[in-house]
Length: 135
Image (cartoon, rainbow, N blue to C red; front, top):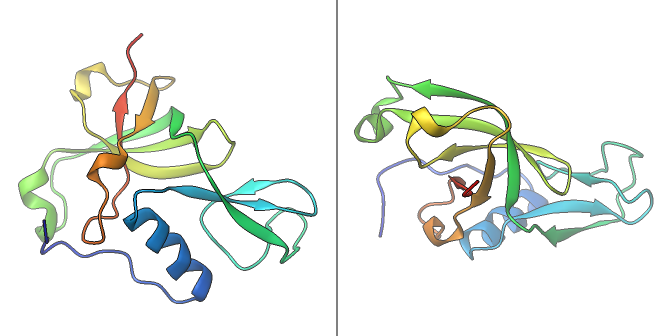
């Protein structure tokens, strides 16, 4: 379903490749062949050893909430989504990334376990949405 909401713009080939994978329903991290570090967001060089020998690796999609905030007055394009529960999560693979959590805000806390809801992804909607895992 097309959306009027802005989607991330890309400035490099590796960013374009990353966001195309997200649009195809596969979220990934970069895995360095030299030092083995996993990193996110996509960049030309490994942030640990500066190697350019890396590849995208699909993630399991499970993570732990590192921090979150309730956005009651988002940008105009997202007003109909308010309130938005925006979170930073630590992926089981190690890197942290930002996404939204589509659950009752009262049930989310730092340390909650979440899973990526890949069913929400499409070429028109590449926003990462997580859902709480049952206790």
